[in-house]
Amino acid sequence: MATWLAKTEPTTYSWQKLVKQKRTRWDGVRNAQARINLLAMKVGEQVLIYHSGEDKAVFGIAKVAKSAYRDPSADDPRWVCVDLAAEKELPSPVSLAKIKAEPALKNCLLVKNSRLSVMPLSADELRAILALASGG
DNA sequence: GCCAACGTTGGC
DNA sequence: GCCAACGTTGGC
Image (cartoon, rainbow, N blue to C red; front, top):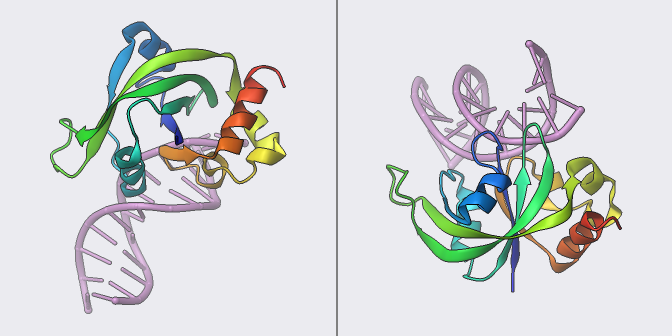
């Protein structure tokens, strides 16, 4: 089972808003590589939600509620979106600084490719982030 | 098909 | 506010 990380600008759409709404359409992704990742998501897979901009931290875990389908917010029918449902909030947010300071996460795409908005996480990377979230 | 110019994202 | 990294566009 794959795990993912999706970025959002909290002023545009935040983890807190997802918790309130319980479920949302994750649309607006306009990057070819991110699109490939969206297409690979399967229902039930976990997606860490990361805030860029002011917060720069992972806040919670969502689950894929609906796999990729045409993004109605795009003119070009090739862009896709998924539906995500809030699953659980991390015990504490994991900041980008902590992620960068953690040797196990040195090569994760969040660090390596700061402009990618939807990316896969390896099992080890997920473990490392969750460990940081519970104070480890 | 190459590459310079430009736009955007996102960290600092 | 700045700039590096990256993607896209358009002239050739």
